[in-house]
Length: 381
Image 1: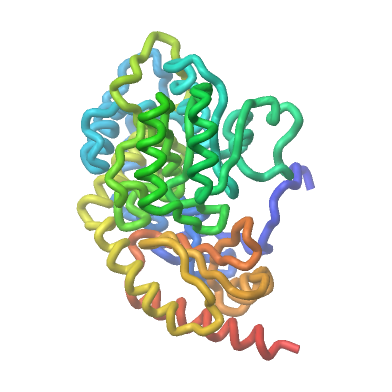
Image 2: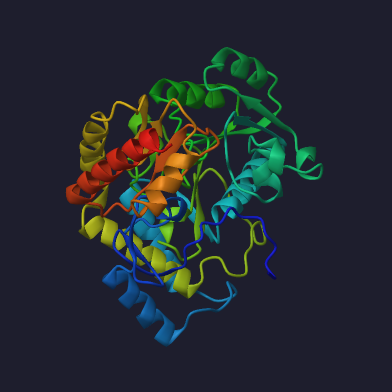
């Protein structure tokens, strides 16, 4: 094998996707309740999305940011309109990690400070700055750990304020809802309080909505139920429905200068075409409303299952907490029931991140299959 083996691989070759379904090389059908880490926001191979990509490829699919690319302006305008951040600006890049790197850089340019405050169980990416604010020592090298970072628990507001009082913190960064950490919602009180503290101590607030954004929680961004507007928001994953694209949404108080940020591939024609298609489909098919509605339906069905000790999250970003390690259950769901789900740092939590196009019939099927898998697990000797 010539690949540098760093992934845990499921021995299935997927060759086709349609809506919420995946198909392997033997044409076996699978239900996708994971969306490839919450990336598939509008379903696999949505016809409008596919047609728009084809049309763009036939015209031009790349040139550098040294020329005017009108698709960038169209995507930015649509994004800010739908997210209700009309007075902000957008910088396009290629991934969530890049978005967080650029967000930190923008913050540091502004206040000339370097210390970052992040939170326990966080995940912000794997590039040098992004991984330094990720709470996972296993994947952080000595080189990455040179950055000045402090981690807090969400409940440690008093300790957090004591740190901010020193007035040497560049930025505080939090996910809207922690994904890989185990679907942990910081809560309305936390966001209101941290917003207030950042204003009080002249600290920049960054919201990482890479997994929790783009309508997944029943709001465009998870933090919007708290009524705050952070200084910077980072986005990616569901933004391109599988095409690599990321972005930074930036308060107008940050002033750009020539060369401040840069990217070769960010904001290219194909990336913007994919992003425009996703937003138009979300808008035209009312997918944010549907995510909220179907999330409530999903939770009500999940409450029927005694083995689930806690249901975390909102909308279509859900975590199922069991009182046992769930890897064997995940394997049974894939092999016996043909369902893809996700795991997390917490070995007892299954993550559910299906497409926003999911329907109640799919939810009913999932519930039936989960019950069968749990029965099999209980009786498998």
